[in-house]
View 1 (cartoon, rainbow, N blue to C red):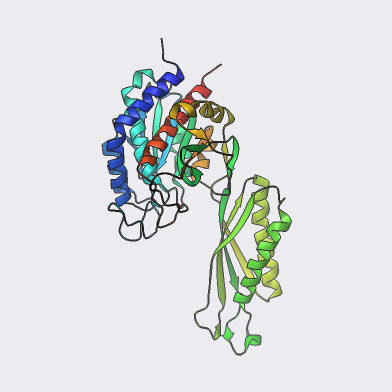
View 2 (view 1 turned 135 degrees about the horizontal axis):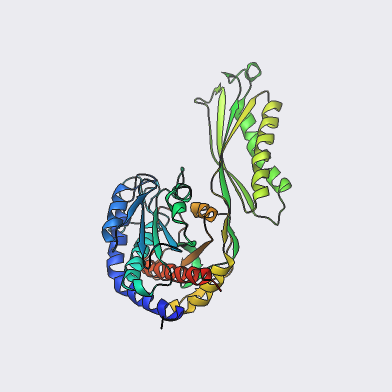
Length: 395
């Protein structure tokens, strides 16, 4: 008689517990050797050496590995390979050197998925569905590794579901934010270039000032978001960089800004794109300048599958975890691209209050999840895997 889902989860959790010393050592190794998007060669090699089964190469530096009964109807569990261009300031012995750092917990996610994969391999005959470990490149930069997999190797494998767990410093330790529906925003990158006419700073009337025009565009854009988007629907416009000029007494011929546009709803995503083009063109023209707008489409909004979430929330107590308060944000993750090929579920695993953890936001140079986070992430990955397998079974 096959074990119940709860019994199988307990066996998986026991196996993960046995794997933790090795997984924590792996986490520290990965943390000390971060690599940037699409350059994760050593990271991928390190991961491959720890897998209990043969892995295949995907999306350049990515790796895919199956555990369990065949390949049909697999539940894919994703972890990210890449670090960020950040100078680490944690001061721990296994910190990275140079301008690269695992400042978003990807080292923890990878080590946890290795622990789960090794534990699942020992229970291969009892698994309700194949477990497909997905080590994805380039979550932090374009081109997106998730998009490449969703349009290529992973799409060809037709997984029944794709799930993921992510550390989060704003969630309480021991809790998991796991909610149905829209939980993260879409994100598009935009570059605005304003063309003016250069002149001496003492004689502004002889030129057309692109910096003044761009400054007015930035102010107008922030004002218009509040007037074009329903205030009850999340949407954010962020101007991250402004560039222009080379001397304080010269009006340059060009100025440039780069923006991020985030929205939970597709129609608002389109409204934001249109808004930027209209405001930039109009304000630039009013200043005697010309604006050019280039949009780079990023990830869609992330929508969690109701059935997977419901099943997972029922299993959390068995993993000694509790649901956090409802959590939805305008953060974004290219994990959402996998929604084009399968139902999704992403959980956010709390760090706040963990012993020794110094609260810092994601991407901060001092963010350092404790080693115990490896166990927390692996337990949630196991819950999500079984919940997805359970929710995909025919009734």
